[in-house]
Each structure stands twice: as C-alpha cells, then as structure tokens.
Image (cartoon, rainbow, N blue to C red; front, side, top):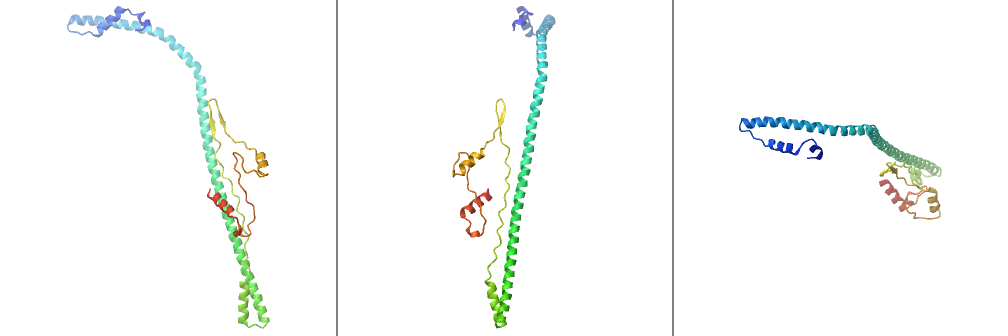
Length: 254
C-alpha cells in the first residue's frame, strides 16, 4: 500500500478488511458481524475515494491544461503532414501519368515517322521502276525504228529493240534517310529523404568541358559515355560499314 493511502487508513483497519474479506457466515451472530463489517468497509472505501480524487483531480487538471496548450500546434502539424503527403502522392501520380502519356506519344510519333519513311521509300522505288520502264520502252521504240530504217526486217528490228531495252541501266531510287527518333522521357529524379530534410539528386554536366576534351581526341572521361556518330548519305547500300549496321540494329533492339 502506498504512503499516500496510509495517511487516510490505519494498519489496524487494513488488517480488519483482510479478515472481513475471508469471512464465512454460519449463524446469526456471524451474519451481524458481516453487516457491521460491510458498513465499515464501505466507509473506508468512501474515505479512500475522496482522498484519491483530492490528489488526482489537480493532476488531471494539469494534464488537461498541457493537452489544451499543445493541441492546436499538434493539430496544425498533423494537418500539414497529411496535406504534404497527399500533395506528394498526387504529384507523383500526375507525373507518372504525364510521363506514361508522353512515352506513348513518342512511341506513336516514332512509329509514324518510320512508317512514313518506309512509305516514301516504297514510293520512290515505284517511281524508279516507272522511270526505268519508260526508258526501256523509249529505247526499244527508237531502236526498232532505227533498225527498220536501216533495212532490218520487222522481226529482226523487234528482236534488236528487245536486246537494247534489256541493256538499259536500272534506275536506283534515292535512299530515304532514317527518321530522327524522339527520345523517350525518363522518370523524375529520385528524392533522397534525410533526417532534417530532403534533396533531389541531379547530375550537373559541364557540356563545354566535355566537348573541349572530346574534340582533340579524348575517348575516356569518367562518368561519361563516348560513342562514334555516323553521318553519311547512302549511295550504295552494300557499301555501308558493318559496324554501322551492328550499331543501328543494337539501337533498334534497345
């Protein structure tokens, strides 16, 4: 029992309460003792409760005052925390949707450009075939007319016209330059959370320093990937370097 409780209840009263708690009734006298003991225990209980409240109420009032003092600030901080979290989640979701939509737009645009280049190549090939056929027909007619004028029989002139037309050089269609592919946007930079704040990690690239190192012939710069860029006009597809073909195929698979 605590010292505070001892102030309002004596040791003898405590011992009596313990005896009454083990009381058994077997006759009328014991029943009378039980009634008297009940009144005694209830009186002690009221006294203890009054003293307990006298000691606890001021503490409860102090706790209430402290809680009332901190509550507005805690409520404000909690509201701000919830809104910041919601804003971050909303931003990330909007960014995810925006990037997904942009990636789809870029994919469709690249696909459109490739299909347009293929269609143009097919058109140019058809034009080249028409030009070649027209030239063969012109040569055949001119040869046949010249042969007949020189005294060849019609059959010999026709055969000579076929031979001359077959010698007409094929018309090579112009090669359509591969379309420039748009770059697919990447996800936002990651934000690193720290104990007292956060920071967005971004790589700072000194383009001028890299260009100044590469132009004289540097081929290794820590943290920078350097690769050759091929620039030429295809005149003969068979003459395209194998290295360029491999790089192009690797880039398309990526």
